[in-house]
Length: 151
Image 1 (tube, helix red, strand yellow):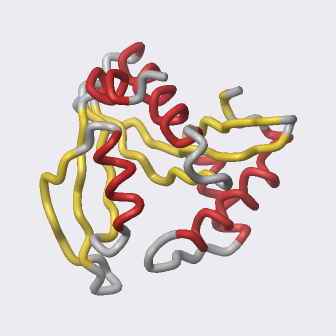
Image 2 (cartoon, rainbow, N blue to C red):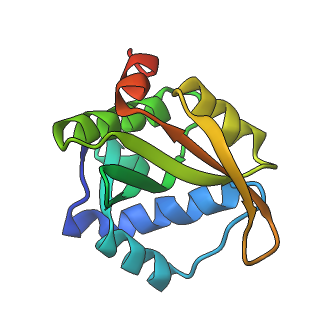
């Protein structure tokens, strides 16, 4: 079941977020307090199974009808949870007249790139992060994401 993050779920969501950072290539890091702050500042959908959070997607609406995905993570990979979260985001975007969803990702993270490609995302830029890491900018139209993530 996918729902908006509620106050009572924020600590559990932060633990899932931390686990997700450890699965990134290269591994990411944020303190628990920083994660809590991020989760409070952004819009977040969580995926629950047996009353436990198994995945989440955090995002920020931007000007000119865009959404930036800040983070997506799933505890149990290859179960379709990531695609369900992405479809929920696409539904939200369409309902709110958003015409583009984008994010940044490490060029080293092939698993993430394959996931985003399967959801309809394509590269549209490249830059160096403050840590001198090469990142790709990727984007997709909400309608394409919805079509690509059909169950």
